[in-house]
Image (cartoon, rainbow, N blue to C red; front, top):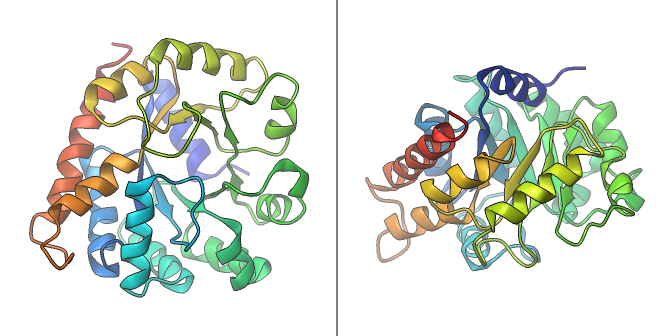
Length: 275
């Protein structure tokens, strides 16, 4: 079965360019503003949208994404509201792939079977669940694939050739290569090392490889796009949200534009690669 993610990467391959994958936290700083940001992302240049599912113990996330999760949870974001956000987004956009990213606990609490049915019905295309290793594929990965959702796995600089086949076994949609060891937003990626790592992963799979963690500006996005099929930006975008808020932490008239302006710059960087 071909998903929106498969279709988008196939289209970009024909265009001979990398995808810009944008991450925002669902419900940050509130559900209404978060939806407005999501709706504005494709026109600004986003090719794929990752929506963070807020969780109280986000162990792979750096300070910016953690703070976004706290803001969202404080504003009352729930899994039900996150799925409703996808449904609302789909009313005006049937093409842009949406990936839910986060941790297994909120899915488990919601109920795996119910979650997969509701996510698919809402218009979700894929899942990235960072704390479920391949050894636990029967828990969520295999049921998700059966439900018609892509299950996107993370590979890291410490994923060696011995481990890589296990990581890739049931991965679909794309492979998310974490370009640095550590948490999100902690350091900038080295484009030369990333290019070598992507080439190594591609010796094991035909899936597109998108690179994230440590991309903050157009220049870095362009450099990564030279050697990858996609560039993922998250911390910089949620930081743009934070900087646009008023003193009590509420959205302002500048919030949506703060994110879309940065996305437009990043998109220009990605599109400038491989010309």
